[in-house]
Length: 96
Image 1 (cartoon, rainbow, N blue to C red):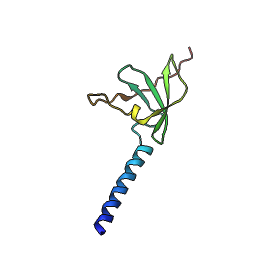
Image 2 (cartoon, rainbow, N blue to C red):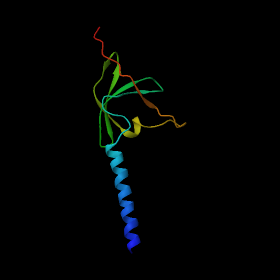
Image 3 (spheres, rainbow, N blue to C red):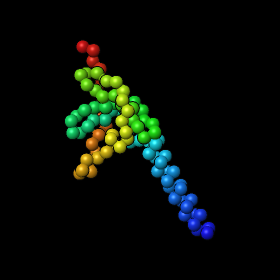
Image 4 (cartoon, one colour):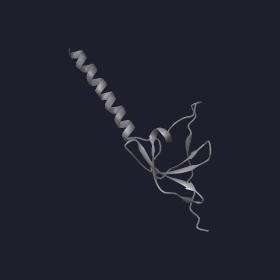
């Protein structure tokens, strides 16, 4: 009976760790930019919370409106196991 309690406790602890990792820890951080290696599109990471990124896309020489993107989308790999989005230098707005 004691062993069963220990096993159940370990399963619960591991489950909590997995959930906390998914909700609160991310590969990319606020202020970083990531680039899609397929089409070159650049995203600026505003923040990460509860499994979702808040990001802005770079288009036409300026940052667009912020949108939410699931962690699974931004941190995914292609069928060959290569990361699709990678950190890159952030472009700067030029008013000219």
